[in-house]
Amino acid sequence: MRKKSGVYISIVIPTLNEAENIRKIITKVKEVIKSEKYEIIVCDGGSTDKTVKYARFAGARVIIQGVDKGKGDALIKGFKAARGDIAISIDADMSNRPEEIRLMISALEIGYDICMGSRFITGGGSEDISVLRLFGNKFFVFLVNLIYRTKYTDLCYGYRAIKKSAISKLNLKSEGFGIETEISIMAKKANLDVIEIPSFEKSRESGESNLKTFRDGYIILRTIFACMFR
View 1 (cartoon, rainbow, N blue to C red):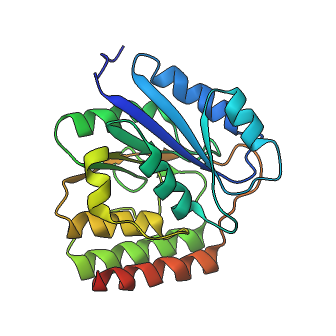
View 2: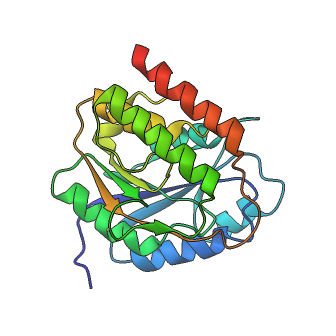
């Protein structure tokens, strides 16, 4: 059993119509961090099902976003509201393995500012990524590494831990699916210490994904170039 870290953990979960998954992911996360001081924040983008009701019933603090706000806006609001020393973003669809949270906490405890899950280093993997999305992610990784002189292996993956003290240095602005790309780039520009750890992405357990490949690919590409002028 992992020793208690002594830090306050804020788990941030963006949601949109995840009623079938939200109680499961909250329960699993609680099992992993039960020895820690923690809070769970659900940032909901206007669910029309019972996501909000179930999240509150499971013990989460719920933040309701404005109309037509996306994943980036959810994470920015969640990070801002976080009271913990560490904020960890995890998807609501059960694709991220909660047990990996322990390794993320350990990485920040030894001095890193940000820990990012990667599906493309030894020990990582995915059973959910399509050939088209894989190609797009590889292209965006290549582009970011070339422009910003980074050495990332994964870019469009939302499983990450960030020290609260580092969040303000990122100056995040992306309201949509460009948020992970923005975090990666702005971390480099802010000279933050970043580490990638292996992460395995499972298939979505229930419901439908809100990801739109071409729309979100364009948003990511736009984010890569917009960050050059910040």
